[in-house]
Length: 443
Image (cartoon, rainbow, N blue to C red; front, side, top):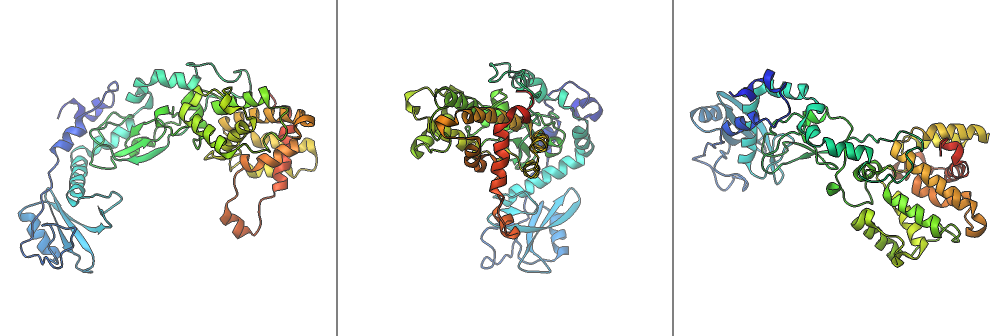
């Protein structure tokens, strides 16, 4: 065993990619089936090969595996409709209920080929035998601050976190300290080729589903290691699918901004040439043009130029901003805060209603708080020009409630026998638009 096999030394070294587990995987037994000599081809399922033995007893399977090979498949003794995978590892024989639904599986991993399932199982058992304590300690002792990912991406992490690589879209002096925390969006991943954990630096063993990858930044880790990773995901633009339908915090962190650039661009353009446009946010732009602008934002991102003659209709720009908010996977007014705002709206005294609304909105995630604040200030400017644009704060709130508030769950509506109080939503949003300087104390 080399130095990387010594758990005490390895985990205290400076961050490096550790090959010990990879070496062990290479040493793991290669699966060899025990072929059947008397199988009835007429009754053998088409998805099995020579490893299928029809019905043989538990003891017979042990006898065959003791003589040679690593695995065989037999009909289960209690139910001839099911199959058992009998597997030998070293001197121990184990039996598993084997399932097939187009793929083979005995647990949560599914394989196209039975030999791959067996190979993956032998690798796991071999590593647990040879390096069980090492595997246990590598996750417990791993430090994010000393991880390969932290070391290799420190400059990028700092740049994206502070937004130093580009001018901020808003004044830094404005309100909350907004360095957004964002949890990683981990999903189980099958890695092609060789992969090492970005937290502990160790090899990610197995043939499929070896670990997890963050869908937003690409961070890869063992499933156990992923539980220790802090909520400091710095999304990489190459992993994002455009602009629309992307979580608001994710988009901000990916672009190093405190306000989504699409919100900033649209607000500036509307205030530049649309404050007096009659029916702004109520009148719909042509659907085809709104869709074209959406595609352009997804394609060009921050390089978009809304002053281009292609976007002369200000209602198209307003329409695409509404569409952006509507397609957020987590609505601007998040689910947890929505009932608090609705409760505040029931207060008969406006001063008390403002206080409770302000307290509720403070509980929004920072990215949502900031976006709502700037959008509300923008809407207040529009309402101030209601004599020309015919859009009072109440008109705006009525139009925008379905866009900013959570969409009601149809099943909940059915079970409750009622629909959300749309008048209460409009009343609440009307207050936010009329009194942004009181709802958001520092503007």
